[in-house]
Length: 149
Image (tube, rainbow, N blue to C red; front, side):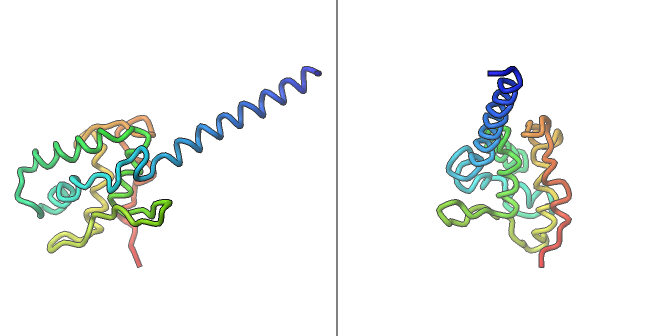
């Protein structure tokens, strides 16, 4: 084989390995795989408490510890997706609806909670790294400001 053919074959193999790696990460961030079913259920009331000062009468630090513990148990590359599922839900490959635990509460609209939820990974809250290499979710920035029909 000519050297050009070897280079081309190597490039094709390398790109297919890279595509397979990206695909495996992207498909594993679904409930029941790298993320537990209904992830971050303990964060629901913590988000309402921090966003609006309403919710359960547990100590805020106890609620935060439970929420951060659940979030920390999720692999870093899936944490933003877990927060998104908490905010908006997901339909699993089996057709089940999961997540979307943030609901309108008396004195705390869902949109206010959605605006706070991406902050769960930040330094001020759980201080956890994500797929983006730090304590932030680029894909969720501004998500709380979107208006639903």
